[in-house]
Amino acid sequence: MGNSAEPVYGECPTTKVEVERLPDMHHARSGHILLRTGDEVLAIGGHTDGFVPTSTAEYYKDGEWHVLETVYPHDNGFGVVLKSGKVLIGGGHEQSLGIGQTFPVELYDPQTHTFKGFSCLDTRRALCRAVELDSGKVVIAGNHYNDDSFELFDGSKLFTKAGEVSEKRCAPWLLRSGKMDAVVFGKQDEKMRKTESITLDRLSGGSCEIEQLKDWSPFFFDTPVSSDICFIGDEARGDYRYLIAGEKKDGSLEVVCVEDTVFTPIRTATPIPYSYEGEQIKYRSAAIVDRTHKRCYVRGRDAKNRLYLLCLFYDAPDAAHGVPVQLYVTDPLPYIGHSTPVVMENGDLLFAGGITDSNFAPFKSTFLVKTGEQESSGLNLLPIWLTAGVLCLVVAGGMIWRRRRRHTQKQQAEEQATALAMMDNITEENTAGSEGSTTAAAEPPSVETDASDQLLSQIRSLMEGQQLFLNNELKLADVAKALGTNSSYVSSCIRTKLGCSFSQFVNRYRVDYAKQQMIQRQGEKLSSIGLESGFSNETSFFRAFKAVTGMTPGEWLGSLGDS
Image (cartoon, rainbow, N blue to C red):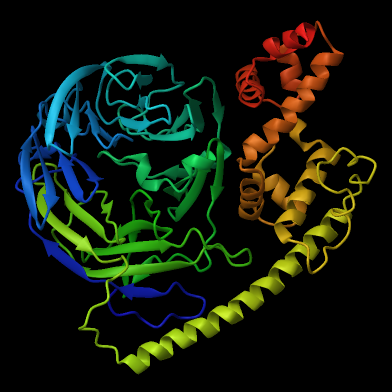
């Protein structure tokens, strides 16, 4: 992976990476859709020289690009790889110079390398986003100089309006938040003007304000970006988490983990570097996730056209220091455009096309940045004895790390238990209904006690003893602060032990409380009981209640009479 610089203690280690110039595409492109389909890379549409939309596509395989014809042009449209392996493409600018919006939708089959036009959008769209739900339906949102709304593709032929949004957004972030739900947010209106919006809209209905969006803005891209590129969750477990890169009001980079309506900033183990060899690094990209190797990259560049990739090892957080980071830097690359790359199977990043400063002169160049795992070969210049020595050091270091980690976990668990015991209103009396042990939360854990089980017991005791769930503004950070730990530990503990998100965990308490109140106060307005149970509005109450029980509050109450 190039020649590594010696890491400086307390600073982000820097590594020089190799870049391979691949064959150019046949057409210069920007505003194009770039995706991986199996072992191929697919570039669809966009605009070419002169800022003119192109009705072409091409795929990269066996060391060369192969040109295809699309049914319609799609300049700044949307593209999403479906679970079937096919690619759904739609919308885009109607005219040259990024003017207007279009209706047409087509489907690409990577097996036959053919495009088929088959339907049209409910609303003309450009600079929109799309994501497939677990049901096979596709939700679409966002627009450019036109109306905005949620739109739903039924998975077969029909596109219909699926719901209103509180405000028009251009190229927003559209993220799955459940098997059949999604959320959308952004800081640019339909005319690309930056707003002060802190509102998030939900496909299933309702909107809410996100505190994090007051001081932080996700990066804006006027080119196609699929949210799948920043997904770090696990659909099979109902885990829908994303890493979103953006900037704080002071211009500094911050990566935020978004799960439904919970926005959690990622703390790094070392400060993020903003200069290299005297040149300022300007970060501006999506968070590019390599799920196989558990890495996340944020792209930057400097005045010398050097490419930077800030790598966050997001699956290896250290409670005391944060997420480990590494900075990768290339030699100057004057012909690499502003585009979002695709992650190859081995972790390399492939960049194709894009622009630097003019939509009238996009690039056709293709680069492979070798950030991935390199295959071994007989030309390895490291002597065998040196390789063996490095392996020994790694093993020894691992043993030391494990010992320190066990000690740290024990120490943290003891500190958490002590902090909990000092909370005056958490007693054995008010935690008698806890699912965990009432004594485990008040006594320091033994060496044999698992730290995650202990932390979960403390979370439950705190939640039930103080009824924190009744606070409709309760945040993950509030619980973490009360327990003397960090948000990542609390979120990870709940997800690992209970298989749900923090918001789902809290909503279960709220639903149980609402059930008790509904039985005791029959005849009262159900929405009022929902608000008193900690839900911020009637929509979120009904939605959460049905998610937990499979019935609406009214249906559930009626079922009691039937039984």
